[in-house]
Length: 138
Image (cartoon, rainbow, N blue to C red):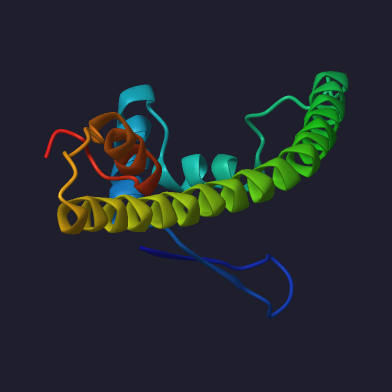
């Protein structure tokens, strides 16, 4: 719904757009408490229903929010390099797991060629799956 507010003197006007569902709520409140819709909209737009005498509470809250934001940025600054390091450590672990996997395959092939008995690499393969991010249940 569009609401046009015109001053008593002059040509300027202000247009407000209120969604229909919000206007319906305003209308229900007006009917419930016995206000005319134009008076209710005037109260809402002018803000005459709020008492601003105690601003100290808002200022305290704003200071607290600023201090919490500073702490957040400090923690983010400390956490960011750790995240960067752990990412590259994980990448190194994956590279090592790939190399170990290749060495195990080569060892198995050489044992087969030389006629030696096979070895159990199940524990190492579980570690490889862990570092490669594979699910061991598959």
